[in-house]
Length: 250
View 1 (tube, one colour):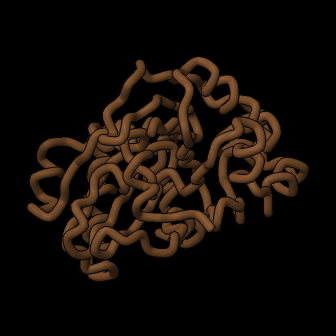
View 2 (tube, rainbow, N blue to C red):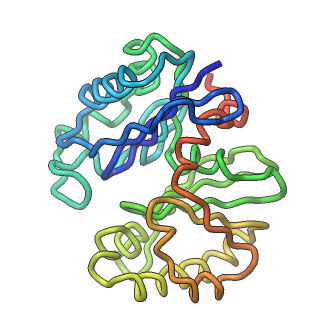
């Protein structure tokens, strides 16, 4: 059983194929996320990526936003004219709302598809199945996934929770703010976020992943505590196999 695993972010789309053990069997394909990105172009782009990799028996796709049973309830970035934090296009917003992305991908690639939030696929690649495990991904924005005993919980769009008035976590700790304030001040914000969320979730373990997790300073990592684990961004692809065992599509 070969799985095509695609990690779709606001800035980049990355993919590889995995064997049953979750080991990559091809060099990773990585492209910049194209904009404007409507549903049809999204499906075509993933088809082009799949054509560059060995043939797979099934596919796992992680993408930003609220995805329920393979249907897009709401997604950020892809509804904007030129990508993250640019003007929202009402035509793109309407096109993505309620789009059955799983069915579209299955029809286009002719293999079974599992479509989840990207943080959920990331989490599938790192959780141990012991207790309540929270996964937060730090990239273009903030991703969130929660597992209890290895079972995926309903998705929470924590990225839209307010931090300071109208400011959301996406805006407060996303890549745009990271570039503006630098590693040190951004790491302080990550530490504050962890401290604020700890009494909310009371996790047994928190995983910090995504492309920017490696930029948290060593001092701020040390101050977070032993129940915090920094995990590599590659988990967004590696989780593509285990996700099938944690969440079976209807």
